[in-house]
Image (cartoon, rainbow, N blue to C red; front, side):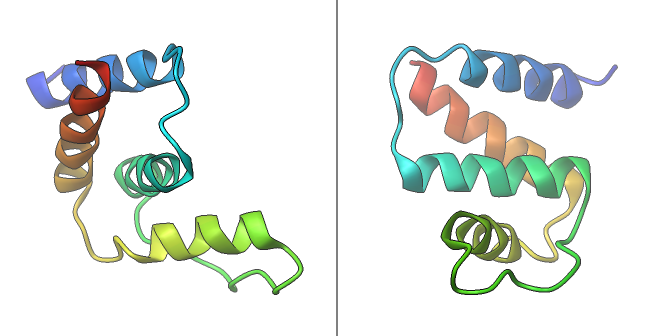
Length: 85
């Protein structure tokens, strides 16, 4: 396993164990970076206006469209390390 993969896996575990809520904006950014790192570009239709949470997640993920898996993993690690300390 590469260093980036190890760092990413550790960051995901550390974020899941956070005792403090980092706020919706940070959680959406983490979600988008995680999905981009593990799946790639968002696919499918944007949820309708009645699905506020689904729409926010879709929009966040779409905001990192085209980012490579490695770039997304590094960005996730960087953001998580700022939260963890």
